[in-house]
Length: 89
Image (cartoon, rainbow, N blue to C red; front, side, top):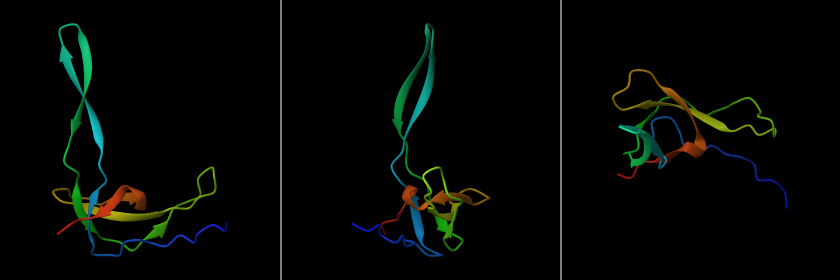
């Protein structure tokens, strides 16, 4: 079966959100620290650049990246296509 040709899923100006992420928060107790999983709301933002490809990794893959301006942040972050989803309106 031949490999599929990768195509960008998003375009400039799309509203996106971060995929579901579980972060661990360290809570200090008297006998040490324990890690408690917290379900944190995903970040939401706007794509401010056209899709671009990054350098190949060890396996030779070149994935699409986007610059996303998150709500409440001053600088855009570069995010892989697999880490963001379209925001439901």
